[in-house]
Amino acid sequence: MIRISVQENLLPGDDLLAKWDMIREAGLDGIELRGAAGMRDRLPNLRAALRKGVVASSICLDGGPFIGAFAAEDRALAVEAMKGMLDVAVEVGAKGVITPAAYGIHSNRLPPFGPPRPPEADRAILLDVLGTLGEHARSLGVEVWLEPLNRYEDHMVNTLAQGADLCRAVGLPSVRLMADLFHMNIEEDDMGTALIEAGDLVAHVHLADSSRFEPGTGHTDFASILAALDSIGFDGWGAIECRFRSAPAQAMRATLAALRGV
Image (tube, rainbow, N blue to C red; front, side):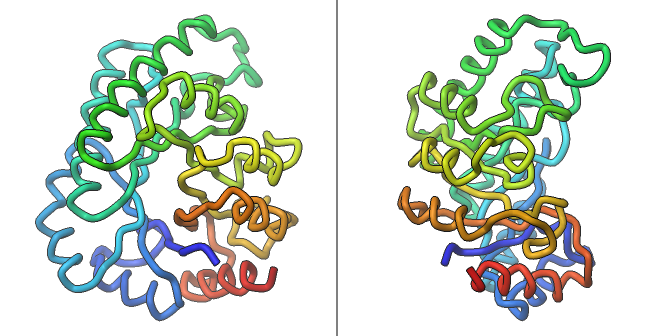
């Protein structure tokens, strides 16, 4: 059974310790922090929470700008924000920080259809930025995790295979993949096969069912997904990132029951 965490924004209240109590009572193992520029400012509170037993599985970028932004100045801001979150990851014991190439800046599947930048420029920019962040992460002993998004939310990286190609081209062990089951449900022909083909590049998983509610509420085949993760020797976390159909504590317990059931 993989270790299960939940994103902090999915739980009520502003107090991380209160959220942690709810997480532990539901039987989960950790919390995924949400981060952006200025996350270093949270360090005093985060350190206090860690001293009281809070376990941080990971950090997920919360809003732009993004590393694949069209404007160079926006990409520079994204790089600095990511470096700050990588610095925080070391402090809180999180293994990695998640970022997509971009979110909502363009989709080839929605009007106006034509991107303002050619694919070869997209690739060159992503390789350059991921290389920069990967070197920073490697110097700290943590990782950058690239998240493919579905075709309606991003035009650059939609599948695990596309993400794996970029990671391999960067060539740093500190640049790996975050596999989001909701996006995979839209983009992958076979989710288990996609995970197996990505292999040890898969560092982290976001848990959601086909409807983007908690696991057990849709038609996602979690048996094949867990089998695929087992076959590649996956030893990372699965973080709940979805909407809830019930109260948070009940939804977290339902997630555990759905996964244990297969």
